[in-house]
Amino acid sequence: MKRKNTIFLAIALLTLSLPAFSQFELGLQLSPSLSFNRIDDDDASVSLSTDGVGGRIVAGAFGDFYLRENYYLHTGLFFVPKRVGIEDADNSTEEAYRLHYLQLPAALKLYTNEVALDMKIYFLVGFTLDVKILEDELSDEVRYVQDFQPVDAGLLLGSGLEYRIGYSTTLFGGLSYRRGFANVVKDQFDPNVGDIGIKNDMLSLDIGIKF
Image (cartoon, rainbow, N blue to C red; front, side, top):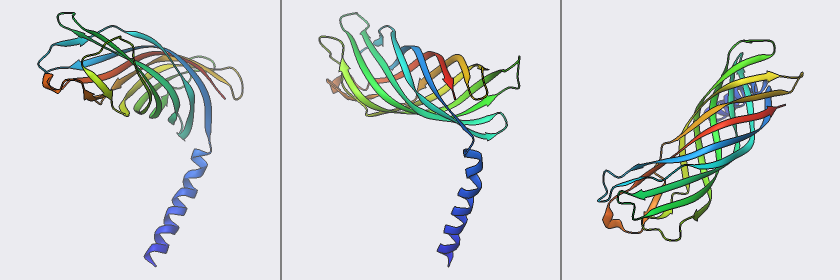
């Protein structure tokens, strides 16, 4: 009997939530980005620093699901290429890696009221889960990182301006920042140098369209 009541309650809650999630907008986004990384070598016997910044293009599709007025749940699927660069303190070694991910964001999207005719400012705050689909060495020889973790996770922050150009069509542009939480290093070539921690960040210019 308890099991039947639990099932009935779950169905009722799902039914009540469907009207809200039935209001959604789908969109496409293209984001020229700067990819860079932070290095934690406090537990290592070598002194390492970040080696450069890489230009990348993030692209994908997303959905904004209505929660209440000016509040939306933002999610989607994005192709996110990242660059990792490492440099010795004495400049004897420079390593660079190319990492490709499929990224799933889960964020809250907040809107202001109209700041001008058909224009609204939005703010984005949430998290990302990245699944690695490619790992490639860009340097001829590497000494430190042998393999990277299959997943990454981070914080997603953004803000921008939306302009409605039709009944169901909206253009937008803004800036976003992805800050990695996790150490992406899985295996090192030489464990005797101690633990090396690398976290990935991205700064992006976001442009796109919603339907």
